[in-house]
Structures are given as C-alpha cells and as structure tokens.
Length: 104
Image 1: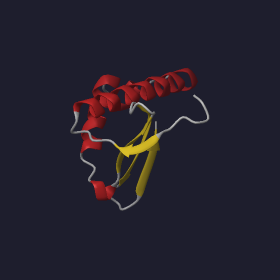
Image 2: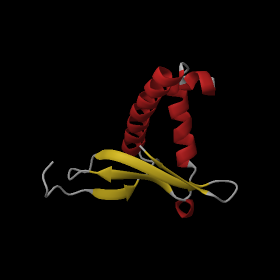
Image 3: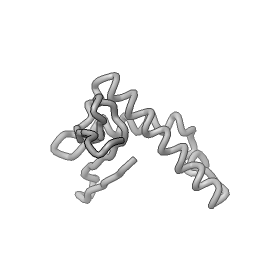
Image 4: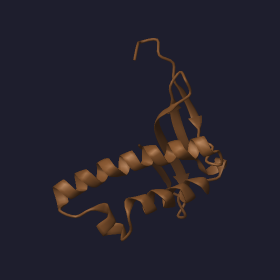
C-alpha cells in the first residue's frame, strides 16, 4: 500500500450476496485465528465452548448481523480503492441497552 491509497468505510448490506460472502470470509478468518489462539493457550476450542462447528457459528453470526437495524448500528467494511472489503467491524445495541463494538 502506498501513502496515497484510498479507503472507504461503509455499512455492509448483508442483503447483497457479495457483502454476505465477504462478511462470511472475514468472520471465518477471524474465528479460525481466535480458535487457534484459544486452543494453544487454553487447551480447549471455540467449538467446545459453543457446542457447534465454527462454520455453523459463522453462519449464525450472519443472522445476528443481518438483524441489526441501521439505528442500532451494523457491520461496516473498510474497502480498498477497488471497493473490496479488507477489514470489518461492527456495533450494535444489546438488549440491556449497552453497546457492543467489535472489530475483525
């Protein structure tokens, strides 16, 4: 990347197949990394904790993220000059009124 690289920060539209595919790919990469860290440091895995596979959990996160109304937050992509998502993060209001901010 050069110093003149242009990035955009844009809310993902998980109703669009491309955005959903990018969300799944970035989320899967994150959970693979996190699962490796947890497994090597703690001796158990994310699937041990959540009692399902990482693939199933990542698809579950699509449902969660798709249900976030714009006024509550959403999933946001950092896109490169060509419009490809290179990172993502999200925010949402939790049922108790607190906010959750995540980055991947």
